[in-house]
Length: 299
Image (cartoon, rainbow, N blue to C red; front, top):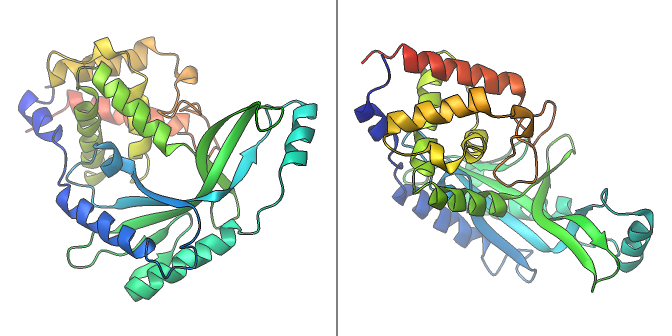
C-alpha cells in the first residue's frame, strides 16, 4: 500500500529551528569578534544547507555556517577568449591574504572559543554538539568568480559564488546563495508545495538509512533539493500523495536526467566523479529504494 497521507503530512513539517538559530548566532558572534586576525577585512557569515533553506527535518541536527572572505577571490577563466585572459591577468595581481592563512585564522578563533570540541575535517571545521549547542560545520571560503567576459573592469561579466579546498588540496566551487534563492522562487511558483515535499523525500531517505536499505551519504539533502527543483511546478499539489506520485513519475518517466541541474543552475545535477554533482548510480539507487518504500509501506 502507498504511504498514508497522514504520515506524509507529518514528514512535511519543518524540524525545530530554535536550537539551530541559537547555535548559529553563538558561532557567528565568536567569528565576528573584534579581536580576530581578520577583523579588519571584508568578510561575510551566513547559513547554508537545510536550516538556511527551511528544508530541515527533525532527524537533522547539524548547522552549516559559511564564513566568506571577500577581499580576494579565485577565478574560473575557461569561458574567456585568449585576449580576455590576457586582459584579466594584466588587470589583477595575486592576493596577499591566502585561503590557507584565512582557514588557519578561523580555526584558531574557534579553538580558542570551543577548545577540544573543534576539529578540522576534510572540507569543514567541525564543532561538536555540547549542551544546547548543535553540531556545527564551518565552511571557510573565498569569493569565487566564474567569468563569461572580461575586457576591463567596466566591461566584465561573471557569476559569483564561493570556493574552498578539501584536505587533498582540491578546489570546490559552489553557489549557495543562488541555490537558496532559486529554491525559494520555485517554492513560491509551486504554491508553497516544494519545500514540504523536499522534507517528505528527506524523511523517506532517513527511514531508508535507518532501516539499512541504503547507506548514509547516498542521497545528500543538497541533491534531493536539486532533484525536486527540476520538477515542473504543476506536478505539485492536490495532496502530498498526489504530489509524490506525480513528482516521482516525472523524474523517472518524463525527465531527461542528463539535463537536470543543481538548484544553483551552475552545474548539472547528475554527473560522475565531480565534487558538485550526484552520481547517477547513487541517484538511481535512492529512487528505486524510495519506490519500494512507497509500494511496500507497512504502518
